[in-house]
Image (cartoon, rainbow, N blue to C red; front, side, top):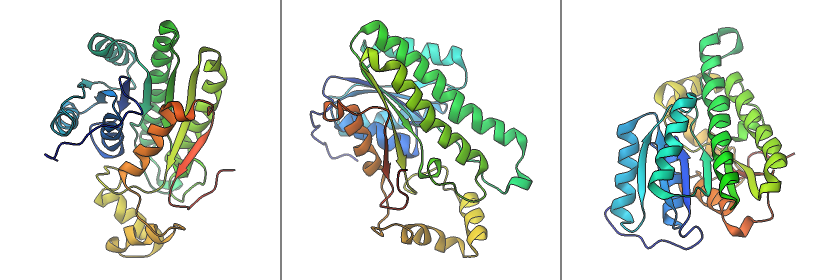
Length: 273
């Protein structure tokens, strides 16, 4: 990624925090937001991967500021430190994207309770703590802002052998709707993006998870990705930038009258209802 890319102006001069931005969709969203002109805080539990995302942004967009922030989103002390770091580095906060997530898969009868609780902590408590402190910052600033929860099509249309992911992704959507009601008076908009299956750079779509999916559908592991792509109306593989574009739209002035809503980026697999 050595080629320099000129940034657009949709988010010029704004500051965004993206959790889980050290890899996968979080990284794609952070890079996309930087390309849209915003300075970005790369929040992740993996310091090395967060630094790598910052390096990609610095190499591609030298005029954009980025900072890597080590943070366990389930630990409120960590979260408070992260917001203090962002405040000291950039000043006011405009955008929060909750993208850190886990997906412990398996049938209900075999689901270890510790994996269930881990999913609740990361996918729900982590989103709650980040949104709590982002909302406090935005209210204190008096400038409004945008909070975006990265949910999933599984939050709308449950998938087999995915109890923890189904439950927490649905919960993220409903949390966002409630937050939108609370925070609208402060000109803080809250929305969700529900991606379909994004394989590019994903930690969730690792070899173990692919084998689980292959067993679930009675196909070979190498057939899993083409199988999921074939389930979409457009019959196209979704890329990280596709999801980033939806996030940028919801963070920008172009969506200034949109709050409490769910935008599905899944090439036409499920319908909002």
